[in-house]
Image (cartoon, rainbow, N blue to C red; front, side):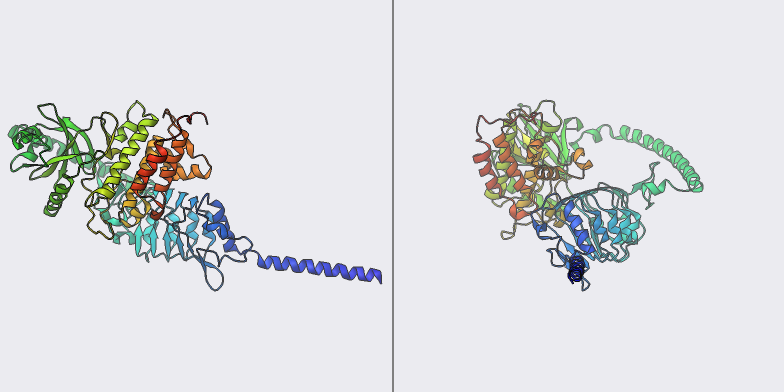
Length: 594
């Protein structure tokens, strides 16, 4: 009887054990949940949004950012503006019922997983405003149901795969603000998208952006194939190309000979009139406008001096125009910025703009003295700053800026920008804060320049302008996405500028691009490993750790992915004055000690 009871109890224990196994197995996370947990594991840092994703849940359908269908299959993953940093897990490619993937406005880096091409139900793919690098996967051409594709404002390189032309259902397409090169595919659906879909990729060409493509021999081409596929053509086509190339060479030689003939003829006919630089601009109908008597010269004297300027007097150039050094007979030196007129509307806009800008005087802004209104261009006359630009001081000169000099430059730039934002009437958004637009005087005091083309704030309620400008690497994620500039987009650019001054590296330094990052992504990576002090330029002497930590804290706030989390420039100046410029004098940090 005892043995029988023991046997029964054993069977019951085995039954209970099997039942527990079955129950636990039924409660285990499903395959879609496993894919999402793999995605979460790959994330290096975030704002904590993913912490409530629990492995013990039977499915992910109640997780934040996740939506499922009636079969508990994931159909939407939406995680935007959550400071997510790290690579995008290839396991997302296992979500074969996924329809919408929204990961934009984060800090993801690395390549776009080619496995996303397995998500054939995808209708929307939004990866814009991250730090993704590498090529666009050709496998995305498998997403035949795709309606919206936005991978703009990343660091993507190489060509646009021709396979994307097969996405016949595509309604919106955006690859702007990357480093893409080569011919835009001229076959398929990509032909219907306008220039705005490809803006900000200097290496692209094609009829969509009105840029003629050049083949290897220098001639134009409309070939939509990628560089790799072009190498795999048959012998007949190569022979034809050789024949065309030879013909083109002969034609080019004849054209060069003809141009030389006409060049010699015109030179003899016109003399050196065409080589006089600005003589054309100021000749016939030019007038000088001076602000508050800032130029103690007659219009005749200024125009006479302008006529002598040529290429030998160029000291810089940028997106807004060419800059010349203008030296007057009494020894005073000015900087002259030449801006071509575009149309009458542009001309009238400038007249109004310059009247306001000429009245702005501030210690940390480059002073606009006046301008020459010529039939062909605007010639803006600014104070000349002998220290050159901050870009030159950081990246091109052999002598290094020490810690105190860098702090003073940051403070001057902050005060100049704060004046534009808060004390000007009307207030001004700069829209192109970068190191080449911070000029230095003989004492390395900073002056903010090139705010002359900033869009003045006309809407007192929104303080928003929609004219796209700026330089890649300094632009706030939301600005690259929407083209809407606010004071907070300037604050982001200033934060990038601070990181550039601290590190001595440009925002899109090659070492960052190789890792799929820019300078902001690098900072976020260092912070995630508690190594943020390593951002400091090893050649910078006299670094004080308390000042460095306070400055890094300010910069981190300024480059937050959320505009609401960024401080105002008034607040930035307050923090710089109270916490950065007055550190503990004995607390020094040796950047070579780590």
